[in-house]
Image (cartoon, rainbow, N blue to C red; front, side, top):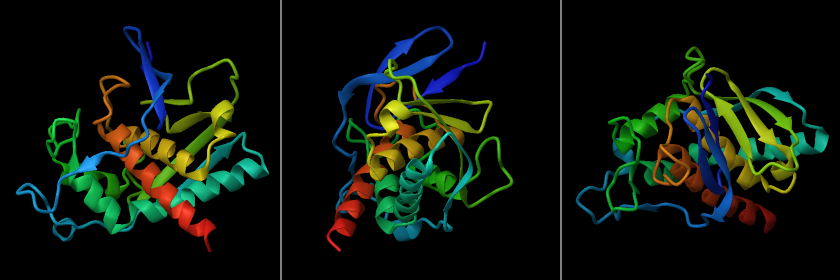
Length: 221
């Protein structure tokens, strides 16, 4: 039976069967993850970690009208700005989990630096021949009764997004959710929807918080 991964960037609860994960509305997670202080002995200066530019590309966009596409492209723009910033690099490689350790949960034995470099390489598990790109294959659907914001699976490039939530999301929230989903696409997962220290959740939170600040600055100009 196919294993589905249901993901959202802001609020979740978990309903588990023996083959599926479902992340649904439960509680807010409004605080972006912490990071190790520059005074800490485990701190890694961002200049020590090299990475090329990562481009955000909409490869296939299905079910979005002109207004929805406009919001989506704004989220692409702010997402690309965030992931290529020195702050994002610093926040990821010096991410501190809830135990105070400089480590992501469910990290596959990889360090924060290695996870950051894999992220910035832009090689999706199913699309290894497009390095340096976050490639998005998105399909909008509408289930007004559902508590699921979106879902994807490991055997497809497609990310499904629920209109019920997308219509009220600001671009920074869309960017956060897209980052979470795309982190699954490069091979990272989480044991449950409560594992906020995992790479998909933590990176999604970081991007959402940074993107929101960028949006606020833009509104002032």
